[in-house]
Length: 136
Image (cartoon, rainbow, N blue to C red):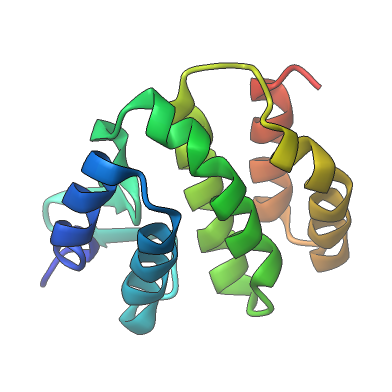
């Protein structure tokens, strides 16, 4: 069984070099094309769909938070929504700062509303993690 991380390895490498937000959008589409979930398990263990982004610089992680927020808010499918939230949290963790980007603070109420609307416990856990990270 192929790993989700095999898809878009070249994009991840280029993201690490450039931090190009369009590449993040492309990576999300590529990885969710055949697998809509935020994790994948096989005989070797469980991996997050975007865990390989962790090698990216904290500056790129911080700069890609706004793109991640856009990706989350664009989702209508519940599974893609959770996967997009996992991408957002990954970028937040990579940023290694508790300074909330303006783009996220500006959209935080919309994000909260969408999560509440889904009535999904996993989405709520992601929101709780994001709020805890930023001490909100």
